[in-house]
Length: 477
Image (cartoon, rainbow, N blue to C red; front, side, top):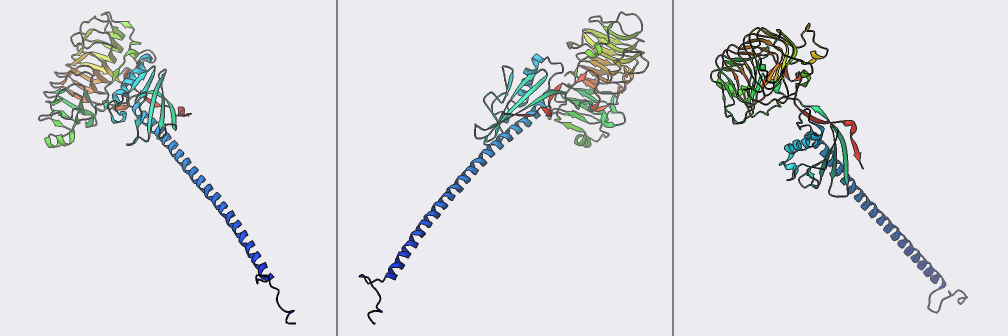
């Protein structure tokens, strides 16, 4: 019995049960190794996937940033050029053949020798303006990561602006395009009662006052060559005195300026130096010439829509009535004596050459004036729109020595003087277009009933600028 109950053993001394357990353990160890390898492969694949996804996201983010930088550069360049084109000053009536070179010259005036250009200059080649040049770019940041280049071409009177924005990757760019149209420029020149490119001198008991508003009696000189561009030797200037030269001296003596005679108050509050010169007007009298079709022949005392031929130099007009337009061709010396009635405007032809000896208009004695749209004159249809000016005489010297009552519009000439007992109310401003001295002497009382900058007279412009047409904005491929 003891022998029967003995456990079966192997030669090595291990029982069959022990051997079975050993085999199971080895099988489990094999499965664990396989599972560990599977997990290792799985985690490796996942790690590679995460790495690839992260790398791809980084690349996409970098590309998106570069695209955004290029788009921002193009948009910034578009706004930059919008400002510059809004500052150009193109003469009204510039021929289309001369337009693009004139735009190039104006942009060069505004931009050359500025930090934006980086030493480049605005160029025009084969009908295209390049800014800053054909190869350069305008930097939008200190390190030059965002830059742009602009080109301008012409289509009639329109300009086509194309702006390309660049980033640090030269292969990533964005290009925008917009059309620009001409628009009239504005000016603050008519905010002044008396304005001159040259020196302004008053003397005697002369006064310059604003009707209803003292500031309408302000004066402006834009002379940069005369160190004393304004000399007030008369009694009063009701408004302020402005000069463009920051180093200028204003001599006002014992006159009242801005409502006070206190020199401290005048210098502190009513003298302005270094002001930005407003645009002086360009004069085009062709609209008036269209109505003045009858030549003057020394007959009759009523002149309706007449022109005075060049070189006629007629005798002094006394006791005459002018209805509509009196158009003066150059050269001519014209004189008006007493009892002159002007129901309209006196204008001179375009393109005259300034020479006071051969081109002059003088007013003596009493002059009565009313605007061209006064009812009952029987003028042709459409002529009544030629309002706002009493005298448009660029390149003519104009003098007043007698009382002129009320003048129904602006007085604009290239040499203006008031003397004797001249005076009256001017429904506009007195503008001297030349560098010659503007004088107001004697007992002249100049009362300014100015209409401000919102009421330009016919034939008066300040050139044109360029403004964008928003509906033409496109992104180019």
